[in-house]
Length: 431
Image (cartoon, rainbow, N blue to C red; front, side, top):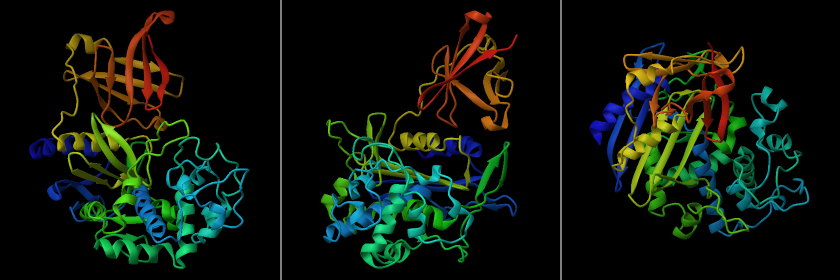
C-alpha cells in the first residue's frame, strides 16, 4: 500500500493544489503520514505533515458532538424545536427540530446561496447572521427530505451559545478540543497568526492565486475550525473511545436519518454515511476559500484517512483522489480501466462545441487521450481521459464522465457529459 500511495499521490495532487498532507491509520495506529508539494509558492516552502489547515465543513462534526453533549446532559432534546431557543425564529407552519438541523432535513435554505448584506462587514454576531436568512421560506416540509444547508449548523452554533452561556469558540476549546487533546486544533482567530499554516490558493483561469479567505463570522459553526491531519486522527480516536459522549449517542451520529416512509438519508449527525465499493464509510469533506479537506473512516476495516489540500477550485473534485487513497488503504484496486487501441483513441480527437463560448478540445498524444475546456468558466484544464469502455471515459480530477457517440443529424461524433447528478450536456464535434 505504501508504495502504491507514493506513486499515486504525486501523480494526482498537482491538478488539485500546490501541496497536500495525507494520513492513513489502521487499528488505531498511523501507518502512513506524508506531505507532498509546496506550502507557499511565493517563498518556496515545502509542505510539512504537521501543518495546520482550515478544514471547512469537517467543523460540522465538532458542532454536532457539542450539541450531543448538551443532549447527554439533558439541556437539549433532539425533538426540541428551534423556537425553544431562538424565540423569534419563524415557524413557517412547521416545527423544525434540533435533529432536523443535525441531519440537514430542516428545509431551511442555505445562507451561502443567499445574497448577504452582512458579508460586507468584517464582524457581526451569530444573532445578526441568523437574522438575514431566518425569513426565507422553507424549501420543503421539515423531516421529509435531505438537502445540505450550512444554515443548519450556523443555527446549531447559535443555539449552543444560548444554552451553554458561552461563545461557540470557548465551548469547543473547553469541552471538545482540550478534552480530546487536540493541540493543533482551534477556532479561527483572524487576529492570531498560526505559524505552521500553508498559504491557501484559488485557481482562476487555470492559474493559482493567493486566496481571499472567508470571514470567520460568515462560516462560524458550519466551517470555522483549523486542524492538522494528526489531530483529526486523534479526534476520531476520541470518538471511538467515548471520551466526549457516550456510545449510544455516537451510534446515533453515525446512523443515517430515517424518513417517515422508512427510506434513509445518507447523513447522520455531522457525518455522511456512504460506501466506497462494498465497504461502509463514515465521512465528511470540507472546503473553504483556499483549502480542501476530507476525512473517511471505514468502521468494519478500522481504517481512517485524512487528506488536506491548500487550494480550492469549485469544479475540481478533490474527493476523487481521497476516495482512491481510501481504496488503496483498505487493499482495493482504485479503478478498472481498459486499454484501447491507439487508432480508436485517435478517432475521438477534435473540437466539440456546445455553443460559441463553451467548447471541449480532445487531443491524442503519446498514446493517450486528453481533454480540456476552452472557456475559463468551464474550469477544466487539460487532463487525461481514462476508458471504462470503448465509448465511456472519465477523468480523475472531478466526477465527470464523457460518452462518445454518433450524432446522426450532423453526421458527426458527439460527447455526452455526465456529472454526479446525471446527464449534463451534449457537445458536437466540429467538421
